[in-house]
Length: 381
Image (cartoon, rainbow, N blue to C red):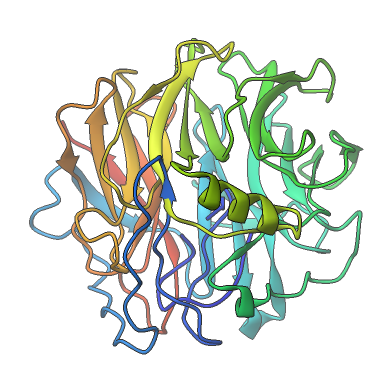
């Protein structure tokens, strides 16, 4: 999802998925948003403040959990890289106007050869791709069934907002584009899908019942079940490795005025980000529990291989700032640890199936403002 232009990268709605805008032209403010009850954040700093300068495409001295950094993409905006089940490929979304790629499209990258190929239709805008069916197929959110053109940018006269395109539906195909299937067909936004470890269930975000909530369905689009029921934006869900829990980000509202504003914008297919916090719940929607209480923009959570820690991206400890780094925290909310120290942006972390490597998106080494690439590193405890 997207896109105004922040001098930072795609951070998402959206999006786990759902990416944040990547620069500040058109008067867009820096990222300041919230997914947890609490006071409204202070006014953001000026959109004309000098953006942070990317560091080199290297592991910084304080990044002691990372080794053997490898850059996987070059140029444009590349993010939301998610592993195949066999650990040999990564599906990701890419946008690069210099190549004529004006809207995000899904690509599959072969790690052995470094070659990538488009696996989406090349139409509309896409988000949140994921391998399934023993890595023979991918599913992703796409607007192309509603309109083959790139969706228009949001109206920033309403403030800094994300477009929640009502044309988004979850679709799938084989890697060569054959066997296309539509998995959702409801009014409004359906996206942010990821897969259960047994390959049978997709967890995703939808506005089908009037609010942004988390649902599950079988991989054929059937047996839909709603997991969250609280007002506010619940999204970016991922299963734990044992399939028993789901980690997600949440935006709640402490007062009726804030909730009314949220609903007013949502009716216009817009969302105004505030503070996002990380939550966990059982795979059936039970035992919901808040993990972070940082009062910052924390998103893109993923379970550590031990299923007791969670890695995520956040602009903590400066919630009005543009610097996003990777952090880990125990699922009981203790043991917060900073993983990256890049002065601009690191986000969308995902451990490899064997737990030995981490893929993430970063501005490090970028040659132009907002350039975001995928990086792969060995993980060191």
